[in-house]
Length: 240
Length: 239
Image (cartoon, rainbow over all chains, first blue to last red; front, side):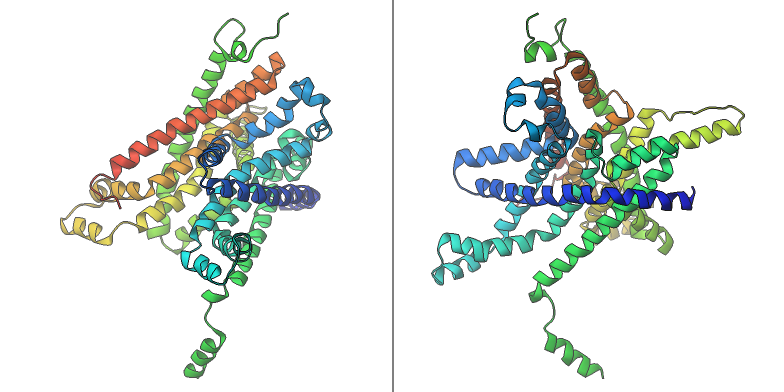
C-alpha cells in the first residue's frame, strides 16, 4: 500500500466521474418516470394492465443487470433488422446500451417504491382534495404525487446509491468511467489493489455526498415533522 | 447450412449448449450458496458486534457496513481477487519461489459475495433481533439456559422468523451478484452463456437463455423462502 500512488490514481480517476454521474443521473431520472408509469399501471384496476406491470417488475428484478447489459450490447446486433433500423446508431454505442440497461433495471425497483408511496397517501387527504372540488388529474398532480414522493424518498435513496454503484458495470462494455479507467491503470501499473482501493474511495465519496443531499431534501420536504420554531424558542426560554 | 433455431441452440442435441448452460447454472447456485453462507456468518458476527460489542468493535462493524454499502460489488470482487493473489504471491516469494500466484477464482468469488452480502445481512439480522420480544429472552434466562442453548433454541428461531423476508432479498441479490463473477473467469451461468455466444455468434439467444435461467432460479428460491417463512411462523397468528 502506497498512499502517494493511491493519491495520484485518485486524481486520474476523477476524470471518469462526469461520465459515471451522467449515467447515474439520467438512468435514475428516466427510471423514475418509467417506474411511475409501471406503478400507475399496477394500481390501474384493469386486470390485464396489472398483470403486465406485475410480470415486468418480477422479470426485471430477477435478471442480473449484467445479463441485461450484455443482451443490449452484444445481443441486439445479432439481428439484421436491428442493424438496419433507425435505432442502430444508438444501440451500437455502449453508452446508450448501458443507459437503457440501467434505466430498465432501476425502473422495476422504482415502480415498487413509488407504488408504496402512492398507496401510503391517506384517504382523508384525497377526500379533502375532492371536497375542494379538485378533478382527478389535478388531485393527482397537487396532492397524491407530492405526498407519495415525500413518502418514497428514504427508500428511493437506497435505489439511487445502488444505481451509482451499478454504473461500474458500464466498464464491462468498454465505457471509460471510474471503473473503466481504474482497470486501465491497473493493467498499466500492475498494482490492481491500490488502484481499486482508490476507485472505491471515489465511489464511497460520491455515495456519501448523495446520502447527505437526499437527507437534506428529506429534511426540507418534511417541515411538519420538525418542532415549530416558537416551540424551540420557548424551550430555550425555560432552560435559561 | 440451415440457421439453427433457439431451441436447437439451447437444447441438448448435437448443436445444443443445454448441458453447458445447466452446468453454469449449477455453478452459479454453488458459488452463491457458499457466498451466502459466508455472508450469514459475517452477518451474525457483525450483528453480535453491533448489539453487544464494545465501542471499538461496534464502530468497526459500523464502518464495515457503511463502506460496503458505498462501494460497487464489481470493485469488491476485483479487490478480493487481486488482493488475494497479491497476498498469496508474497507468501510464495517469502518461501523462496518466484512468479505470480493467482488466487483460486471460486474462493475469491464466494469470499467477495460473502463480504458484500454480509454487510446487508448485518442490517437485516439486527432488524430481526430488535423485533424479538425481550421478555422471551428473559424467560429463557429465568429457566437457567446457558448462552449457547439460548441462542440456538430461542434467539435464532425468533430472529429468523422476523428476518426471513430480508434474508430472502439478500439471497436474491447474492444470486444476481454472482453473475459479476464471470469477470474472474469462474464458469458460472453468465460466463458459460458468453462462451456459447462467442462460439456460435448468437449472443442474443444465449443471453436470453441465461436470463430465463436466472428467473427460474429466482422463482425457485422465492418458493423456498415462502416455505421457510411458513415454517418459522408456526404458532403466530396471521392478521
